[in-house]
Length: 256
Image 1 (cartoon, rainbow, N blue to C red):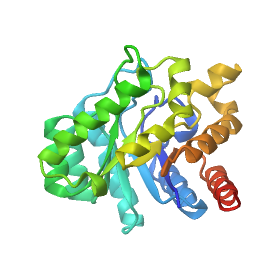
Image 2: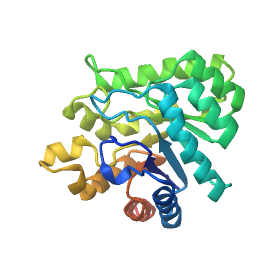
Image 3: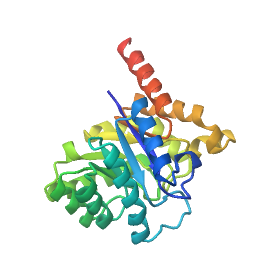
Image 4: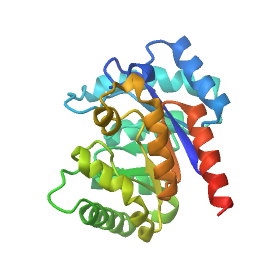
């Protein structure tokens, strides 16, 4: 059954305001609500990666994550936590101190990050965020093959540890994003779990002339398409609707 990764940002500038929390009370309320609604894991980010954003310093990112992860881990000692970071030093502290079980890295990885994954056995979200040159699907699959080969040579059990994220919204035109979604099933040849991070993204709201706040319905349509293409994880802002989509797509598959 596909799983749900709930988005929580301890940032003031993530692209959708509904994902942001600024204090412990609102953080625990959002996390508790998502878990009760059916989230399988919580993804916490302290550095915005929205288009055209400027990353904060490593120390500021770590300061934000420190209070957030300490707060959440104290209240929910056993839940699966994901840390949304591209910095190996930040990821390592989150794994060691707060038992983060997933590193969600939008950068596409580096040897230092792969070494951390090999040492700790943490699960790792490998994101394709490169700018497309010509053939979006061929370039994406080629990237994933190269990076996972490197990871295998570094001692990582790729099948158990690596989750592939096509990087919707990163380095792609509107048309290229939709090409990836329409052809997501091609990633099945790699034999790894796929995560779809489509929630309220511009490929929907710009297409329809909406705002992120108005794009919940469009997000659910995209999530359904991703599930039909074989996605095993949905990274979402809106958990109840994602649960409904998963259930409906599963029923449709079961009744073919």
